[in-house]
Length: 140
Image 1 (cartoon, rainbow, N blue to C red):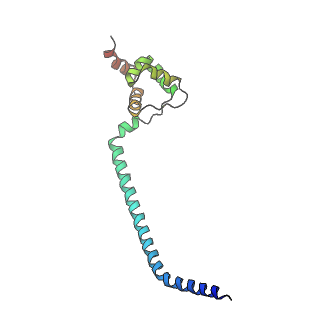
Image 2: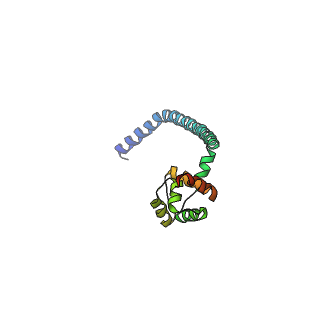
């Protein structure tokens, strides 16, 4: 055998023996820390779930209204169901008549701003009489 190989093997063996105990202690510390992190994550999830549940109870009417997924055809059908012109629907929703026109021509889903989405959901829940009543003061 080569002397260099024998010395390398002996030094490696000694180094392994010398580092085995400190590494074992570190491994147990790491395992403890991982358990603590897992426990804290469980607690955090429970707190977040409780907070979401509480906020869902307090804001349920608004979140229910904004769960609509408006499409161009939905806007057109809504306007026709209420018997409104594009300009009248635009006044109820709070946008311009051109916006309603563009929405109706759009293919697939449209993405209005949150405030506009809430207004659109509110109008969707109205009947003809209620929509006309809201428009009556603004008409000459």
